[in-house]
Structure formats: structure tokens, C-alpha cells
Length: 450
Ligand SMILES: C[S@@+](CC[C@H](N)C(=O)[O-])C[C@H]1O[C@@H](n2cnc3c(N)ncnc32)[C@H](O)[C@@H]1O
Ligand code: SF4
Image (cartoon, rainbow, N blue to C red; front, side, top):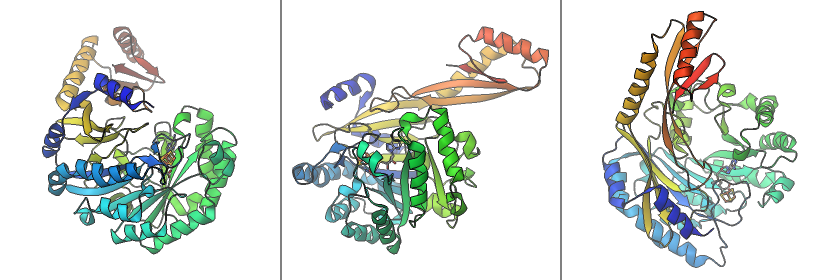
């Protein structure tokens, strides 16, 4: 990819800003903070991947490696030390790309960029099962890492070969998990259903079966992001999970966790909107899970796609992201969720000089005034008859969702729902449909707004 073109496009669609503005916005924020550190390289580029790093050969690219970890990253982190010191940091997350490409000595130097890291309740890193060594595990133990996420994706050789990803036998993953657990580090595993459609169901069922021979604490079951709209696959995905014996020892992440996730819906009902479901060992206490292992679940992506409900105090509220290098697929982002506004920045590194852009800004007052305007128009239609329920629908909608050019946009709407066949209700709904020609219809429901 020609990254200069990407920069030109960023300048067109985003608002270029300065590090000073980012610092100022963080200075006005309070509450819990999550720190994200990006590791932008990958030894092979997996076809399915939404987070691909830049292709990297450790023998040939040592200059690039030293420049990124030894110079660029320290330079982008240092100005933010006062922000980090002033805030309650509840999570450090080292993601990628492939963070386990860092040598043990590099890991040590990178972790030391955050002098207060030991005080945070949660420290997590992503591990590629084919790219790691034991010295790294000792460094993780030295820095008190709470969790490592092993990106297994699948144990099936054929699908991994088709996806240009090295195969790692289940025994190797079992050994890696055991070594992490010996060091007091919880183990999370990533599996993907349907990286491609060939034998997708059989492969996923076998992967779940193989996984059970490993001592792990959490599994993230991803439904391949590009395949989410296939209803038959969605049914198959959930069907396989429910038919597998995994639910004997593991519970749905959201079960009993409403105060952390802000979601009261059972897994079956959220399935259409969540591309990953997580299962947690029944032996793990939900508080421990949400403070030590996965306090960042609601902020793993850029500004969330739906209106975020208030979260439990101990979960990550705002995110400060560091590090990027010509990210081919996904930008490194920071976002702030204050009462008065939500703002999202990206950090861009093309020529070793960080650039910052505002990709999204939403003022709470703007949302209220647009909702009030919509309510006024609704009111003008006439009195809402008994039996009709009204609720607000505020969403952040994306254009070009799976690319570095995501453009989040606030959508303010109202939802109406009703029961029964009362003619007064139907007359009212007909008037609404006429008055709001761009409405969307559902069974006993209607949505109006932009
Ligand atoms: C940054 S990536 C992987 C980290 C590490 N480089 C590795 O390969 O294990 C984080 C996770 O996102 C998930 N993922 C990436 N692209 C995906 C896609 N298109 N569909 C579903 N899951 C995806 C994978 O499970 C992956 O482990
Ligand atoms: S899955 Fe991991 S190794 Fe593969 S391209 Fe994505 S980030 Fe890189």
C-alpha cells in the first residue's frame, strides 16, 4: 500500500490536529484510563486479518525494528507521562500486529516506558503461537502481567495454509499456556469461525474440541468479521458452541456481568451485533475477570458503534493509544468519553514524525438538541396513543467499517414499538410513516431519525 495516498486521504476526511490538542483534551478528562501500545509488525500477513501489521523479516529489518522500539515509541509516549501519572490507569494492553515479535530485552525497555505500570490492575499482551520464546515469558512475569492472549485462530493445517498463516500444533499451544500459567499469568485464546467457507463448521467444532485439552481461562470466539451477515453461518456458529461440551466448564462472558458490559441481553439476542463472543472459566470470579483480565472489552475498538451505557467504575472509560507505523489496515486510536463530549484521535506515522487527526467528535449538547428536535416533529403529528412505547436510538454509524478510512457519524433516532391491533395506534403509525418518509419498519416497530 502506498501510505502517502493514505495520508492524503486522512487530510481530506479527518481534521488534522496537534499533539497539544490531544494533550489538552486528555487533561480535561478524568476517570479510568486504558493505555494501548501498538506493535505494528507481522512476520506473515494472514489473509483473514483485520489488524494486519507491516510485513517484517527479523533478519533483514533490524534497523526498522530498532528505530520503532528504540526511538519512535519512546518519543511518542514521553509527552504523555503527565497524563498517565495523573490518571487512574486500569489497563495496559500491548496489541498488534504481533507484540510477541519483540525480543525479551525490547519488551523490558518498552514496559519501562510506563514507570507506574505495576500499579495498574491489568496488563495484557497478545501472543502469536508461532512467534515467542521462553525469555519473553519471564519478562511478562517480572512485570506482573495478568493475561496473555494467544491468537490460535484454528488448529487446522489446511485452513491456516489457505490463510497464509503458520500452523502450530495443539501440543505447542498447550505448552505455551502451561508456561504462562506456571508464571501466574492467565491465558486467553482467540479462535475464528469461518476464516473461509471451506469446511468451516467441521473445523470450528474440531477446534473447540482440541481447545479443551489446553488449560485456558478465557476464549474469544470470533465470527469471521467479513461473514457476519450470513444468517446460516451465524446459526451454525452459535449451534456449534452450544452443542460443544465447552459450556460445562465455561460461562458466557456477559452472564451476570451487566454492570460491566452495560448489556442485559442474552447471547442469542446480541449475536447479530457482536462479532466476538467470549467464554470465561466458571472458576473465575466475574469481578476478577472484569478488573484484572478483560477490563477493556467495551473499548477494544474505536468509538463504539452504539450508544455506550454507563459502565462499572473499574472498567476502562477512555483510551490512550501509542505507536503506529504505516498501519495498513487499522489505525492506532485514542478516545475520550467525557460527559460533555466524545472525541477520537488517531496517531499516524509515515516518516517517523507522529501526526494526529480527529476522526470523530460528538458533543452531548448536539445530541440532546437533535433528539429534542425529533421529539418536536413527532409531537406535531399528534398525541402518542396509549400502547406505543418510545425510546431514543443514538448510534455511531460507520462508513468503510473495516478499513483505515472509517468515518464514524452520529445518528440520532427514535424508536417506536407497540403491541396489539388497536386502530388508534395504527392510524397514528400511518401518520408517522407519512411524516417521516425515511423511516425503517420492523414487526410492531418503527425507527425514525437520520
Ligand atoms: C491483532 S490480532 C492477532 C494478534 C497476533 N498477531 C496473532 O496473530 O496471534 C487480534 C485478533 O483479532 C482476531 N481477528 C483479526 N482479524 C479477524 C477477522 N477478519 N475475523 C475475525 N477475527 C479476526 C483474531 O482472532 C486475532 O487473534
Ligand atoms: S493475525 Fe496476527 S500475525 Fe496474522 S496478520 Fe493479523 S496481526 Fe499479523
